[in-house]
Image (tube, rainbow, N blue to C red; front, top):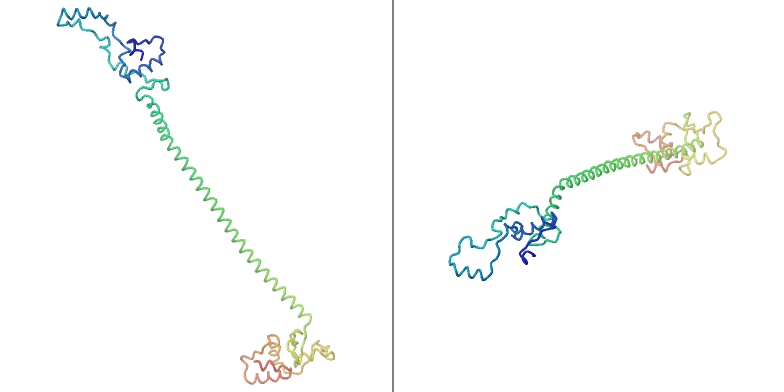
Length: 274
């Protein structure tokens, strides 16, 4: 601006950086030739001298032409200079927007350069998460298998405990029966059963036998003697145990003998039910 006002460009005292900024600005404005003027310009003649000269000669000579002090300057003299440092107050033309554009391009370049690293890091994290998920599934599957095994073991233990309780109850019942066992001598054949079995049918022969205190077992074998054929006596005892008479497979003659025995033992009701 000082040059446009005065026609003189004073660069005395400017630093190298300032000179680069000035050169860049003049190059943008198309005024780079200002920095390299030719040897001193010829002195201007007065208007009067010019007028006299024009009157005395209608054809000017080549030496009379007014010289251009910057005619020998070339644009390339300033093309090789370094670009000015952004931020020193020069904002001519598109210079202000050039720096942000270069900065954005640099950022994009850095982002593009770091993209493979970012992709690799994300892939590594994904693989780690996948490995963690697979490890968790393995632990979970093992836990479920262990839990299923424990459930099976618990089921086996519960079944074993139930069997033990059942056997214990049967043993206790059998012990009670053994403590109250009754021995019978039927026609010379010994039978042994519980008092509860013999008393299962009310008003039977055995009820009368056991309810009367004067009928006691013999001292020889400790059995109550019953003077009957023992061939079908087991059917009578089984009927008292089961609550029903089973005569399947017996021929008519055997059925007749069994009916006679049941009639003697006062167990006719079982015979009628069958």
